[in-house]
Image (spheres, rainbow, N blue to C red):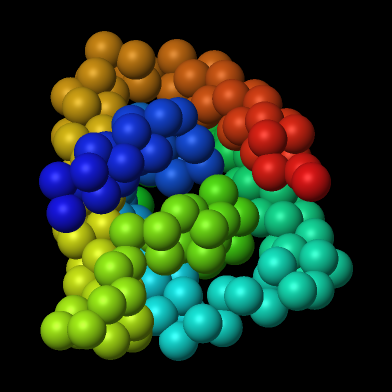
Length: 203
């Protein structure tokens, strides 16, 4: 389990779509919005864990076109978020306006992760290598479920740290007339993340 925890920390501390999305969202819309999005990301990770536990993720290895569809959806969704961030509004948004609807924030967090091929590949290709198949050991789905719970817990802690840090930096970066400039800068950053995702996950 210790080796698995180290592997999860390495993956989660490596810059990726989840980290970029949560940081840009928290900088643009504040701590509460970022925390709502974390709930959605955790749900997305849970879906990946459940799919891998029942061996359904093997379909992505057997049918490469399924993986390509998932990959392109993930890249396209990041570009959609970047476009939305670029379309700034001259009227400052109040905290109430930003955080009054947690549902859409949770849904976006969920979508940003459930279509993340980096996360899917980890659960399908890496997590099973830690499963011990021998007499006296729990069955495969049970062990995968335990690893999934550990992964989601660690990832959520890392994501919460990112949101808190970004929220602390927000008053220094997003204030008054600089708001739109920073939002567009973050949108450009998401475009670069989408490009990195496209390059890093191709087969």
